[in-house]
Amino acid sequence: MNKRSIPLNVLLLSIPFWLLAAWNYPGGTSWDATTDGFSFTANYVSALFQPLALNGMTNTARSFAFVAMLLYATSLSVMFWLISTSYPKSIASKTVQIFGVGAMVYAFIAVTTPMHNLLTIISASFLAIAIVGMLVLLQRVAEYKQVLLGSFNLLLLAMLSATTKGNVFVELSPAIEWLLFLSGAVWVALVYIGATTPDNLSKRMRETQRSN
Image (cartoon, rainbow, N blue to C red):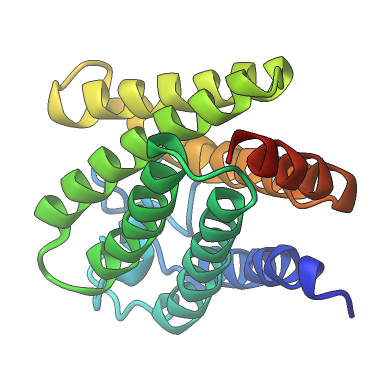
């Protein structure tokens, strides 16, 4: 297997574990504890990690969710790191490296420890900074479609902050959170694929040598 494909395969491997976690969630939402099963439009990601489901039953989704989040966060951390190293050294590339990896580390810790609220804020802040850094890198190489998709993810992050912290259309926040989880992963994966292709790596290496 090509080493370059390992982070992508790990990310794909997280999908069945997310689905298994959702399938095994007993029920209940923040608005209605009597509902059965899991809803991607009414349950937050964190609901899968609690000892008890919101309907009061033992949460049988936890073990699947833990594996899913571990695979998800690890794969994106590696991709953030490799994206940053595939561009010439700059403030933007270092920003992607530090804040991208940091965002995933804090996101994983946030759903697996009681300090959920604080760590979620830190993770979201790190992610916003990493996205901006990626947008700068992509703009420099005229990857405008990726800039557009990245801007969409930044908008989703802003909307999630507004709904959860600003209490604006709170009922939409679980769906926005899951959409960000999906769209953000797809975007990082696409940027990673583009940034690490042999042709692009050779081109950037030549640019770095000329600048030195």
